[in-house]
Image 1 (tube, rainbow, N blue to C red):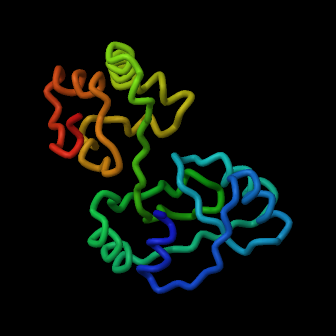
Image 2: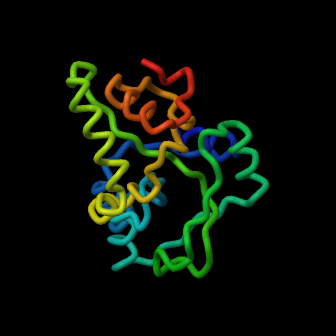
Length: 171
């Protein structure tokens, strides 16, 4: 798990509890947990919800530790979250990026996967209105997908636009 790798690499001992985002927010509010790790596009709604009623203190990871984490897993580069993103941030916040990607059933018809990929990439500004992570949707990040192969329809679209598709993603 992405967050546990961070804690383990930095030598931080925790007692992890798996909660939904909503349960984590409620548990932070009622004090049954001390901290929560979130992965998501920013502004992340769960963090915005907590900061409306409770003080939030970000746990900052130093640049040296960020570099150590990136060296261990280069598919998760360092990224700055603007200090204007949340009211509790008074300056940019250095953290790690966790890329998002869509998954589908392998039996999804090729023309449907092709059309979905094309529509998403060619309309990411519009998609970004509903899904904050879409602002970073780009073929440039294909090399960061390490858990699955592309659907043949998505692969066809990426080939069509001349994107570099890593060998490990070719269906």
